[in-house]
Length: 561
Image (cartoon, rainbow, N blue to C red; front, side, top):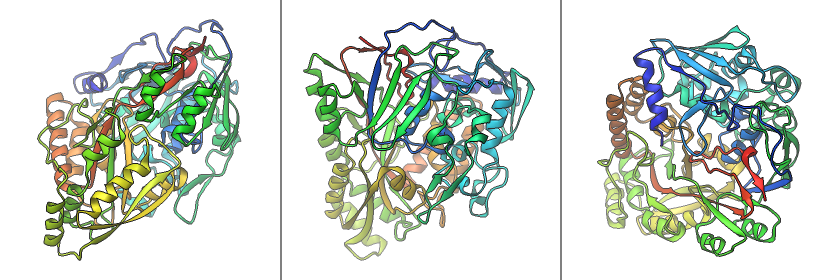
């Protein structure tokens, strides 16, 4: 599914890359369109509230779903796939050395506050991200900037490991031409721009509503303190922000001045319902018209109800047990190997995924170029786990602090507590003594993991765009507190991934990612355990929703019959 993005990016090594407008943008159409549609209100349930409605400051799916309706980037992905398509840029060119990118911008686009979208606005946004300081350099805040671009203009002392930035500068050649310069070529740069983290916001609103105000609490978790991301998010998308009451609902309304295909519904409401059964009951009662993260065991019930329907999202994710090597003896390879052999992954997949999951042996799904069938695999073997712990010289049973999130479902983890309980049971039979810890998903759990406060933890990833760099590059190309930085592990893996990112020969790049996957499996920074095929549920009269493998769905094409 990521092959098209890879193909496009690899062309930069041969000659200047020119991509013409394909007649589709973030809204699914480049025509202005009529008002069309049937109107009405659609209520959609997620598993939790967004963290904040500022794409630069989030990495979770609940936030990204809403942000996608309000903001757009320079490029997008083809609905239902991972092919790069024009959005706010109609075309782009890359210099022969791959370090200068010229974006030709769409004409006649306005932000939702009535101000003009232009090249100066593009540069304002890129320079904003590059110039983040203080609390905005916290890994729980600017996760995607750090994984895609690396460092900032001036890294804080505690962020020296980020190194220099891939980003160098942005200049407005004229109102409709933005030139972005990189410090080195990157075969994944263009695809990365489809991330919601790089949606273009109104410069006026950013300044007016304190977008760059924030703090880090005593637990190291970032919190924005301005009102841009909570009360006044302003982009160019098909829906505009109306209101948000946390724990109840977030309301968007149709943007009648949208440049692309205008929304067919008048109002879009997102409701946080953390419990799987409660989401299903709300759909059955008509309280909501759709929801994500259907529990696998509920799919047959929904299929058996003629007033409801199931839509499948293509499998493009991985769930894993993370291991933080800053907590001895987890820095001992034999202990990590023992943990891998002590996880009964097959039992978890069989028990909790209703035939919609397969065992994961790598940190990226088989569809991604660079997947390696020859990696080291860890089947459930309690005796081998105990033997390895004995060889490591640790006292058994070895106590480990194991974290899992509450009040949430994820595409790769429908019921985190059940996964945790099953893994804890198998580890307790394998020479370990598991100590449970839990926290609400947002912001506490994500913040604790990102800040390195969880020794062993459950987490996962749904790909954002079509490239191995978005999986194993995101995880392991730079030091991250979630894996451990005090004794950061494997510079050899980083070097392979760095080489792969700038390699323009497709075959060589594939070989590098295969090599990286083998090295990661031998290093055991964590244990992947499942790739899943998530499902969404809707009322039968809801039409026009196209599931995306990366979870980037726009509701402007949706109607209620």
